[in-house]
Length: 167
Image 1: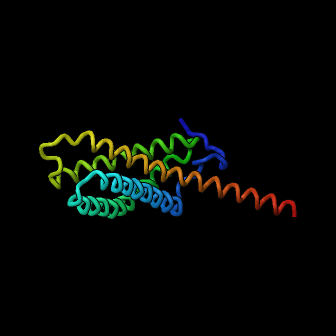
Image 2: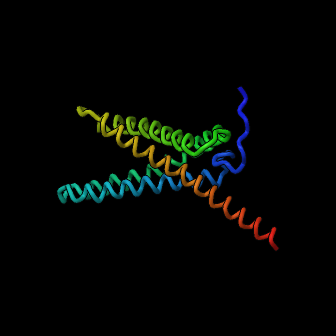
Image 3: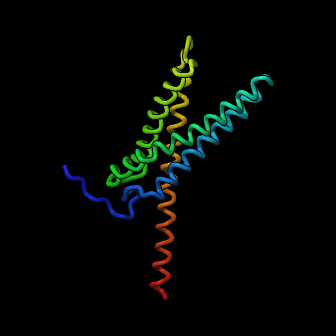
């Protein structure tokens, strides 16, 4: 079955270019850093003084590691965006990027917890799934930021065309 091309005005009608991937990657990372900052703030109010320093260290480490991981995942985001360029609508794109972020981060979290020994003697399935779902949301936010950017550029382009046509 051959896919029909979708109109260029439709969101997601083109594959991701380098600028889109950079925007997606930074938006995903910034969302993750904001979530970890909230966790740090909430966690620091509920922990004893001696554990606060460790919590800050862990969150800053997570922010640093996540920066590297989102850039390692950027080529995959580009490929997925290119693969989905003929899929109409915003929801399928955002859903696929949520799943991609959740699965990739879930695997990374499971590997990290097994390497560090954090999973020894404890059931980590719940926290890992919750963290993976949140990371998936951050990936979906990143993809959504590209759609918002596309719409803004399309609006500006239409204004320019109307302005030049009326001149």
